[in-house]
Image 1 (cartoon, rainbow, N blue to C red):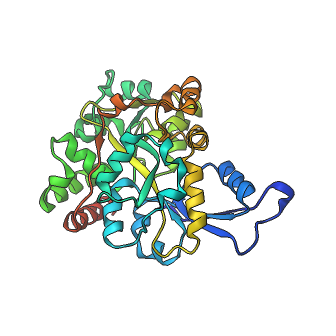
Image 2: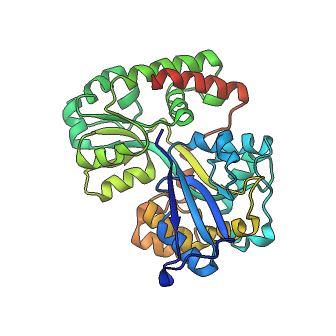
Image 3: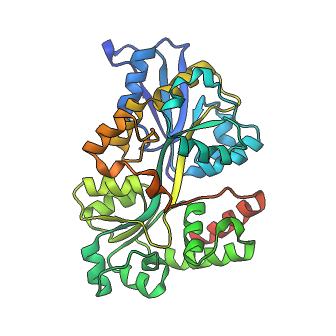
Length: 351
């Protein structure tokens, strides 16, 4: 897990900070929010933003996270049921969020199923988990052009060979366990503790062959050629390619996992009014697509918005049609018993 980083941005106009009494404390993923947008929000509103970054999605569920009194948090969609059940999120006020109408209704509908039909969160950005491959190096290691399949990493014969040119693995327990079980024709949400434990044992064996394990360093290592294959978030794979690496981002035929990052207000937030303003700002079409250009994760804006048309003409790889999304599978929420099994299995992987 990466150490948290705190980014406190002041107003750039004249170098003056906003009034000390108007502060918004935000807890989000590292590299998932363009600093320039924070600066713009501060200039427009006079509200000073303190942005603290976490290194792993599980940090959002921690007691510590909600004990620190943030005003805005960014849970992944599958975390919402647990947070809502624990009464850690408050209902949003749609009257304060006029930009909700800009959000893709398909993504909004998917969230309704994750949050017990209540408005505790709104989509922020989304992405997939697939394979980032340096095809030339993978072909050399395997002696054949690689198939678009998770067998590249989950088949022992393949990962033994790819270990020689460098494998990267994410520290993302629910996502990785789900991908392995999906590759075997199962679903994580319908797997018992024993099946989850067996999946953890297989991943622990793979972990012994990986060159890097984590959520940030692998991007630079892909770009520099130290890795030839990695389980990757879509935005990170695009960053590696933008840095000049000969990378292909593959959606394996067995299924690529889709996730939605969301915006929510903790139940103990101190600046609820400013939190609504910040969420609405980030949900605006122009801001959301600008954020996509910098973070390289997909925007959540409806496809017929002019801002999406402009984005498609500039970065076609950042615009995914709703029909294409149907080929991805959506990570399900887990019961407390299943979550305990996942945590126990992941301990085997992290040893």
